[in-house]
Image (cartoon, helix red, strand yellow):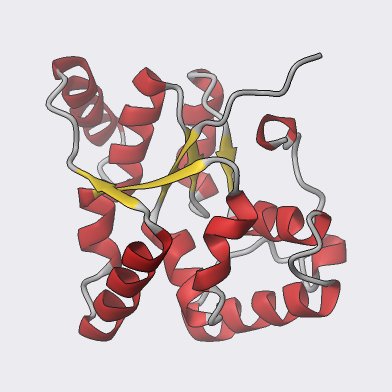
Length: 183
């Protein structure tokens, strides 16, 4: 069986934020390689509201050669964006943008806001990752060890108020879904 094609991963602001507060942002691209990381401009604006974060994100984007793309002008994607907003106005702009683009472009979404994205992703056959899934990939690739993953979980919760499942106190507690689309 041949190697799967590399795909685009649309990063949401919450994943970027978790990796910033845990001082692990420089490893995010390596963990998700060989897939291409893309940040939609709506997500970029959300992730860089704080001046200190903007500096970190801009340096990371420049050093890692990550693309920041404008929200597409495609009429179907725009209609989908507003349809998502109408159906659930509490879903953030970044999540809505990622969801609408991923539906039409068959991208992967990296977001920790599972409550909002999972039903939509399942209904539209969109692959998705959460922050804990990314940690599992880092562990499997030998980029992080268990101690580093556990430290990440603690810091993301304490500093960033990450809403990981309550039963997850360390990476060994987390059972990911099927991540074969990443391999």
